[in-house]
Amino acid sequence: MLDVKIVRENTARVEESLRKRNYDLSILDRFLKIENERRELLRLIEEKREQRNKISQEIAILKREKKAAVSILAEAKNISDFITEKEERLKVLEEEARHELLIIPNIPHESVPAGKDEAENVEIRKWGAPKELDFPPLNHWDIAEMHGIIDFDRASKIAGARFSLMKGMGAKLERALMNFMLDLNTSKGYKEILPPLLVNRESMTGTGQLPKFEMELFRTADPEFYLIPTAEVPVTNIHRDEILNESDLPIYYTAYTPCFRREAGSYGKDTRGLIRQHQFNKVEIVKFVKPEDSYSELEKLTNDAEDILQRFGLPYRVIALCTGDLGFSAAKTYDIEVWLPGQQRYREISSCSNFEDFQARRANIRFKREGKKGTEFVHTLNGSALAIGRTVVAILENFQQKDGSIVIPEALREHMGAEVIK
RNA sequence: GGAGAGGUGGCCGAGCAGGUCGAAGGCGGCGGUUUGCUAAACCGUUGUAGAGGCCAAAACCUCUACCCAGGGUUCGAAUCCCUGCCUCUCCGCCA
Image (cartoon, rainbow, N blue to C red):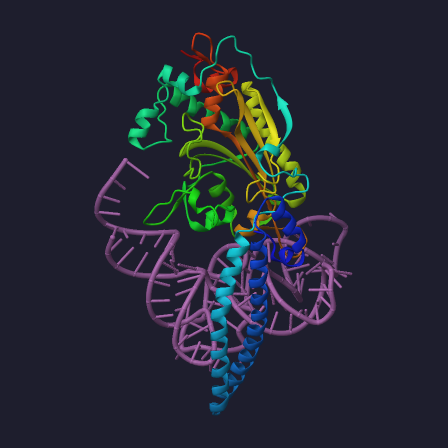
């Protein structure tokens, strides 16, 4: 959510942001129209409330002195009725204004490259070189099938398309990765969290999934809960409606969770394999920081995610999303893309974002500076470190051998308890 | 699932036969007095948000709202009524 004052007083800036993001500008006009009416009405109502409060005081005095208060009582009744009537309209306006404000995306940071879609994302750096294999590389699903470590057919019998069933060394690899990542992240000062996987509407609104992206979420019927699409949701909402001390910051969290996504609108995309699933595992890192630190923290957070790939020796590149590809809540995002020999291309394995105060304002997460009056919104950041399913894909495809076996990266062997999958 | 108790400011905790209650008291925080330093004691101060006064900000002032949330009764609600959410205790059930 943007600051109402910025939208109101710095409209040009918001307009430019919407244009860069290829958004329809009409949401801005709609909001301003409602907001102006709301403010005008609020002023009127507050004035009337003041009158009412004063008269009520007078009545109280008369009552105490046991005097009659018939005429003044009638006047009070009139004012009260007037207020009640106007308040109904105000409530409607408040709801509408809030809704409009909630569907306006964050303003991209000045360093975000301009561009209309993913084709205009900018490569920032590259690590490692795509390996030249002296045999035709297999897709991960073929490798997995060969070893009997992922069973897509039975998964679709049990649940449906876009689900997977890990077995034996496949299940163990998944578990080894989640432990490896959590252990590494916690060694860097991230506090481990194991959060609820079902959350309420307020939490989804706090991080920006709702109200705009209802269609991308799974929801339970009765009682109503939303299944988290990422650990970002429950972990960021840990501090919803809280005022933190300056000395508490920065706060670093890491959490393993399954993630649930409808993947509506991605029909026909990545229909085979582990790349795009309704349920997948991910280790996430989340930060709450002071505003002046958030961009250096984004660099550090991205480096922490990259570190995992480096330890495994998986080639990757880091790209900066352009304005047209940037997520709704983000001010700036780096995607980390890992090289997949089976597809002969880089695929996203992590997404690291600075939301500035966009989520903090929605979720009402503030902090108090030492010796200063008032509160400020914190800045929130998060990134995958890493998406586990896709890491499995990367390992299977990058470390497949001519004889069909898969060599486990050295850094992972202790957690895996094996050197190779044969 | 059944029965009961409760949700008040950063925390604890009064108020709850409706009016001077944004709310006693304590703790904590901040400022000061005292002091060689620390501690203690004493004095003072200390919520959040919105609108307006000037709007380029800060300070200051005024008003409005907020005692879990949402409705209702009333001239007036922390206080009365209804609904929801959450917490605790006991019983039942369960991994």
